[in-house]
Length: 129
Image (cartoon, rainbow, N blue to C red):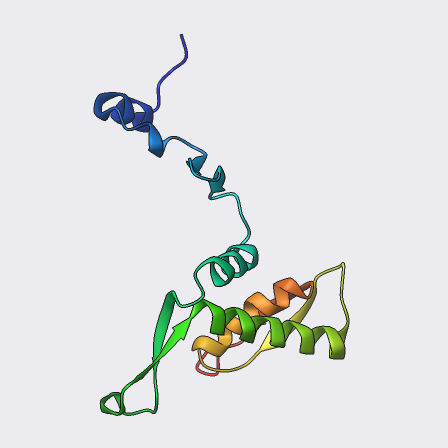
């Protein structure tokens, strides 16, 4: 008999089969944990465009309020950045490394995911390092 992992024992005790790997959604058989992040962002942007991804402050003063970032807005920004990288650096099968020098704000995430889409790798050199 196969050895049961601690997770298998817990699942057997609770009779929760939905947590077994790979995680799947019974409606459309999506394998959770087996998709790439750029693909996942595009899928959510298409299926639920107004879904909130996050918020960022309007200014450096939090009292000025926050801007909602939806998946559609984020995916559009990623695609625009990927297009720009492709137009200026070209597609790269060797995953050429590009440097990102700046704050770790939403732009960092946009550039990182856009670089993946354009076939590049991002090396983050933070200004405070």
